Image (cartoon, rainbow, N blue to C red; front, side, top):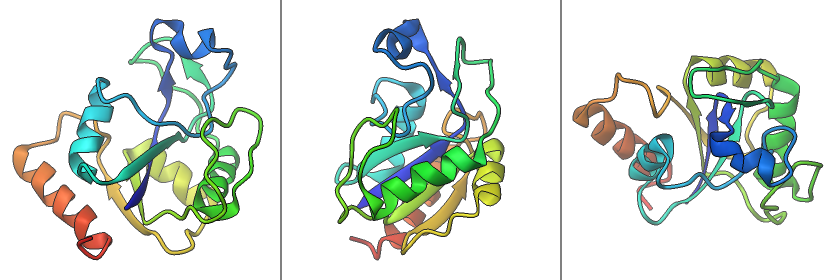
Length: 158
């Protein structure tokens, strides 16, 4: 199962992203499993899923409490790349080939949900699931189990 999660803003933790040469958030990336949001996302999608993340805001921010400005045009470009267009644009990291398609699109949190709605992109075949931001305090064991079940069901239980 190929899953893309849209988060809000990339926190340039310990200047690692800018230190790698990025002036803005990468268009898409594999989130670290040690990151709180990453750990939650991997728990939700399960061990067999291939997970990539993109952000609704292109800015790199300096702390978890800072926020960027949503950029629906940039988000739409990122989703087109990730949903099988392939190729690379400046700032891209992992370049999926033209056969890579999104099976499940997780739109995480209110800012990402609004940017996704405003970007006008319609996935080729992916099931779109809106969820709270992975780091939100609303998550309970029951919500995690229900959401994980919904993600698996969206992919036909595969």
